[in-house]
Length: 309
Image 1 (tube, rainbow, N blue to C red):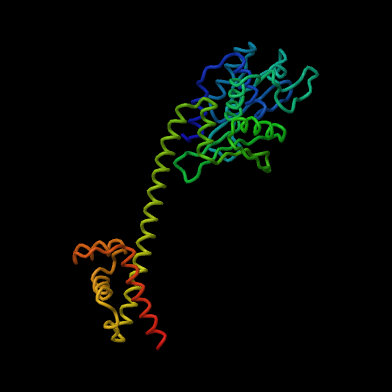
Image 2 (cartoon, rainbow, N blue to C red):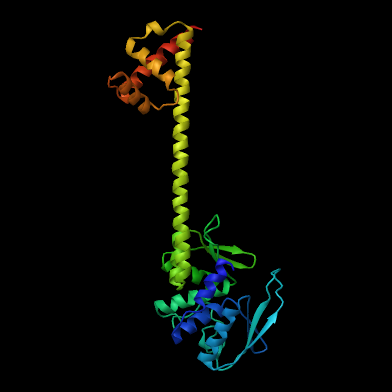
């Protein structure tokens, strides 16, 4: 079972008040419906979703519907569950699709989503209808809602961004895609629609991935530091080799020659490590800054020899 299906199944089990059920139905049906011959038809691959819609319509409007299994023409192995409901008792007006003059309403009215819980229910319906979300175990975080109608897409985007979810919108061949890519914002959306178990799973995976990414970054930083240490030490050893080939060690004072000895003895040590080694083994304290000063003298002499070649 995909993560999207898991989320949709969880929210299909939530209890609603009457007004919340109307809002959820409105969110679903506005984005997934066919109206023909005074019948409202709704299709989905998820049996639990179609059962929830049918039960809500029965409870709210005392209307019976029929569920048929039809072939899915979208190259999916799953068949579709199609719910057919006779359009009666002004059901389309009551869920905010049409006004009293039987004109289609481009965006849902405040009569349907007048408070926060009704807005959450509406978004829950929209997600159940046209939403998908990547499993957080995958390489990228991504949630999208594929809305067929531009006015509806802009309206849903506004609802999402009222919750500061930073939802973006793109035009696509079959409609308008609203998407969220930030992990924290996706988690917030799941909280908004009431998918608490899905939030726990999402957050556990997100924390694990974040820790793993931090560890990888630290390892990369450590490797980069090691690479710089080796590169620096290699250049210092080349300087020493140049001085030795030109019989120039006697031109260095005793303390600098001591550094030559220890750099050759510990070629992979960082400046800090080399300073500590020299301090311990000679019983003469030397700081990293002091060691660096002596190494500069070695480089200066090596550069002078190179200029003479």
